[in-house]
Length: 140
Image (tube, rainbow, N blue to C red; front, top):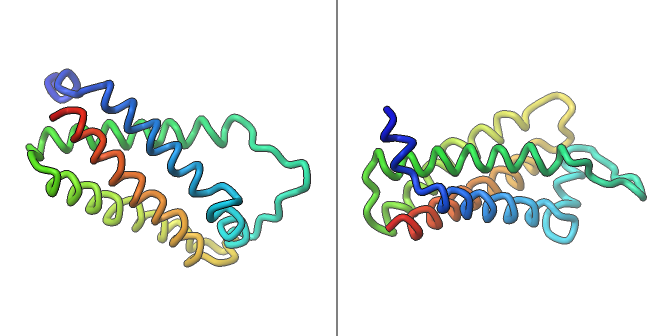
């Protein structure tokens, strides 16, 4: 059990975390998909509204947790090719993150759950695939 943690390349995990968090953050900015994302939730951004630290800390922790899980899966599954890393990224990104996002989007207060699911789910699917490729690249 201890080897799961000691065999991880923590530098790769940190680089992947930063890349995943930055990618997702940019994806949800108003100049990208942010306006459609906010509209899908029914959120009307007040003129002087600013995100508080929770909007950065919680997603960063989630990206870190995901990057750790990906690094563990790369080791446990003995991923040894770019194709394997890409496949793992897509499987976890689409099969878990996107699927959960769409499921969570179907709540009574969500104005456009399918739009929300598509924007946030695709951000996670791509972000996780990017993180997986980064971890693979640095650890091989």
